[in-house]
Image 1 (spheres, rainbow, N blue to C red):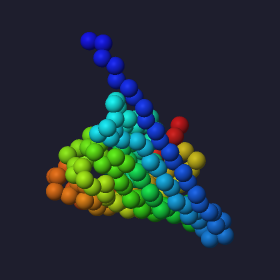
Image 2: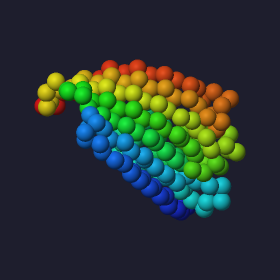
Image 3: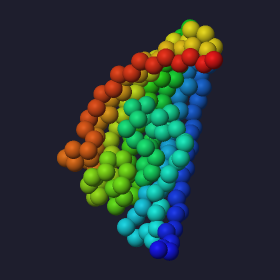
Image 4: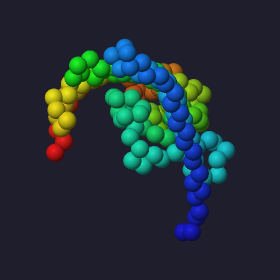
Length: 166
């Protein structure tokens, strides 16, 4: 067949913050990310596909969310103490288009936009320029969009990760 599908998607990402070097090199910042979903009136596919853009680094460290029909507002604080780096992130996830239920939860309530929240704590010890170990604790709380669907429930995640660059 020779059917034509139109693809048109958008993504915006804004960060504003302040670094307070005199207080453990602290950085406080607010990040706002929004990308398109496909509305019921769309003629084609308008859901954003980020290809290799790292959702892990920018949409919660628990890797529950993915790009496409996602609005993520996050409050963040990072700081250092000796060879240790610490990060605290609080994410508020929402669906950009209510009618698009194809991403971030699948079977979702198309009348709600609240996907949920995620809190991440990460501690990293840098042993050398090429080796570090990180520990992460994350807590995801599902929102009204996912409540009762059985797709994504409240979750906790504890991860220990080693990175060796050679």
